[in-house]
Structure formats: C-alpha cells, structure tokens
Image (tube, rainbow, N blue to C red; front, side, top):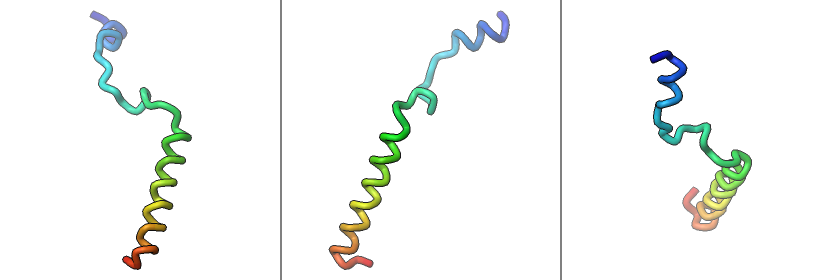
Length: 46
C-alpha cells in the first residue's frame, strides 16, 4: 500500500478544514463578547 492510498482510506475526524464560513463564526463570537460586556457593566460587576 502506498502512502497515497493510506491517506485516501483514512477516516475524516471533523478537523478545522471541515468548518463552515469563518466570518459568521467570528461575527457571532464578537457579538457574544459585546453582549457579555454590556451585561457585566449593567449589573455593576466590574
């Protein structure tokens, strides 16, 4: 079995190359950060 055949038969494990659009993930992440910051300031925890 050659190295090429070994890589073809290897099972995919859901690594970072199978993720969806990165921009949506970044926008949602920063939105969560902003919402948490507003919540912390409104509650007077900082």
